[in-house]
Image (tube, rainbow, N blue to C red; front, side, top):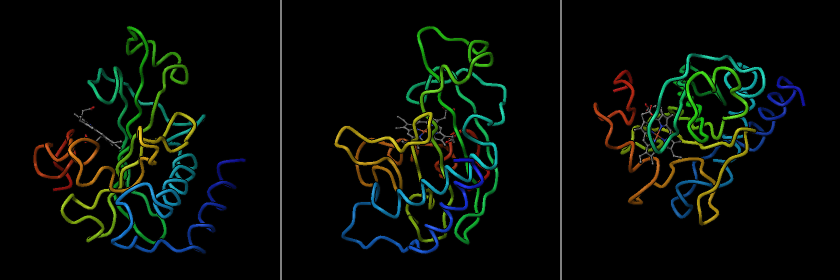
Length: 183
Ligand code: HEC
């Protein structure tokens, strides 16, 4: 499907089903609403050239675990389902001994995952900066943890490891390592 058609169908689907807050009994991540939002968001990212075959390329930099040997970081405000907020897109490249030049010359070959943080409405996850996390594979499929739970939403909230547990350590208490703009 063309990015624009995918975006429209994702938006129609999202708005017809609504994006209700999950009930307290539901898991903090990997539920139906999380997957719907993640799917709509990937379509929007393709449409905006942030992901997919025609994505804008930035100058990659050397990264560190867990995100990958070489990384790209792009940020832009987005509007989705009536909410607007900053979206941080991190492209994670890996492979034996790869260099920044390898990635620049053939990004598709080394792209292993796209991890994002989307700032949601106040109260979505007040203890954790109201961030919605997703880990996609290179094609935009939401990846799963070893227990088979999709990595979308308040990922691993309350658990000792995972997106939130690690990002909690970011300076400035904004859950973002690279800067403190969203304090
Ligand atoms: C073990 C620690 C750790 C875990 C787990 C982790 N991250 Fe990160 N993340 C980092 C570090 C360190 C950086 C900044 C360094 C860099 O550029 O990679 C970062 C950067 C990011 C960024 C760029 C914004 C920022 O904070 O600078 C995004 C987006 C991101 N991670 C998403 C995720 C998602 C989604 C998950 C879960 C699927 C996740 N991260 C899990 C450590 C972690």
